[in-house]
Amino acid sequence: MWAKTDKTHTNRPRLRLWAVLVWLIVWQLAAMLLGEEIILSSPISVLKRLGELILTADFWQRVLFSSIRIMSGMLLGALMGLLFGMLAYFVRPVRELMAPLVSVIRAIPVVSFTLLALYWLNAEALGGFISLLICFPVFYTNTLAGMNAADEKLLEMCDVFQLGLRARLRGVYLPALLPHLCAAAEVSVGLSWKSGTAAEYIALPAKAIGRKLYNAKVYLLSAELMSWTLTIVLLNSLFGFAVVRLLRLAARKWGDVE
Image (cartoon, rainbow, N blue to C red):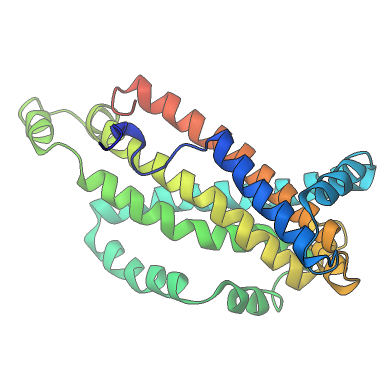
């Protein structure tokens, strides 16, 4: 018999400890069978190296440097996507004007954007700019979808009582919009860290995490490379939880997201 599925989590399976342990064991066995630390470091070696890195000031400086730029870019992209999405909903020419731009941003690879942006920006600002660029279309399209999902009967009632735009936004559009913003945030945080650190890897800002990824690759430091990769995964999870949690708290206040 099939196990019951929680409808509120069908799109995102919960992370189970036993499943994580199984894959850690598989990783450890693969590293032992291969027997080449340069090619595949064991999880024990990676965690040991990560523990050594955490004790250094350089580690925290790089975490802070990348976090500020990548998350600032993501938040600015979210704000721009929200504002332009709402404007496009109310003004059809804006929606038609934005359609080609959004399609181009989605189609062009991150590496192409990064190389082009190097002509305009310094290396330190590149991670944030790429995060902004990647997150903008996600929030733009989700904002449009959320606005279009607003209850037409409620909008008709607003017309009958001659309610202004502020009341419509607060009472009708916002409850419809918040679930879509939650989905956009959940996707965007991951995309921000992937694209932002990839941009750092190419641009090589001196104080960024991407620079350490590059150095570890050049000097064949597999355990260090995987330690920094694990750091990125943990930062992604931490910021993703925080951002989505805040949005879900806001959505619960309006009664649309559990």
